[in-house]
Image 1 (cartoon, rainbow, N blue to C red):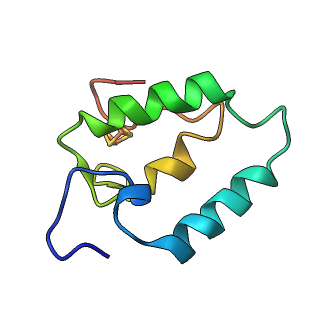
Image 2 (cartoon, rainbow, N blue to C red):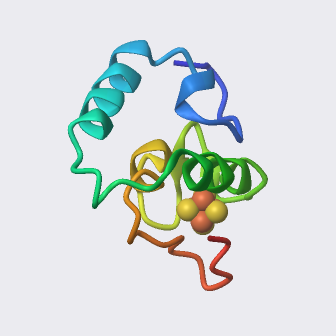
Length: 83
Ligand code: SF4
């Protein structure tokens, strides 16, 4: 865990075990439920620019964005609907 809050994804915080659990969760998702890779990457890059991102968590909903963005039908919880 980084010492100070950062506007960064979990993959940048050093939380390896948690990230591994999230990756395992994503790989277990049904293909019909999972967002495609391009969509996933685009979503995460939008989160990286968002002021609500803190240490991999969206302060709007409390989700790990790397997890939330992986589900096709999930949407950004912001009123701005970044994705
Ligand atoms: S408000 Fe939307 S864009 Fe911002 S961190 Fe949350 S999910 Fe990502």
